[in-house]
Image 1 (cartoon, rainbow, N blue to C red):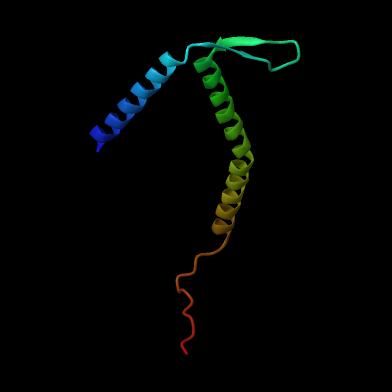
Image 2: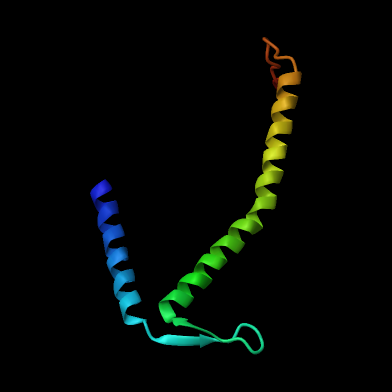
Length: 93
């Protein structure tokens, strides 16, 4: 299984290297009025991909912290409740 994983990683790496070497043409990006940023296409794509990953990770922080608070609250509640040795048996019909 690990050989298959490494083979897939190698194929993806080779594909990305070929993609990067084929896309070295300079591009002009006008992000702000009066400002032009010139960089190779592959660098521009990498910068915007990384920025998207960072923004996506930051958008999940609220959910992660809320879940952690809820988990800690549930753990505190579980510790406060006494553990009964005789579980309740549901009535039979």
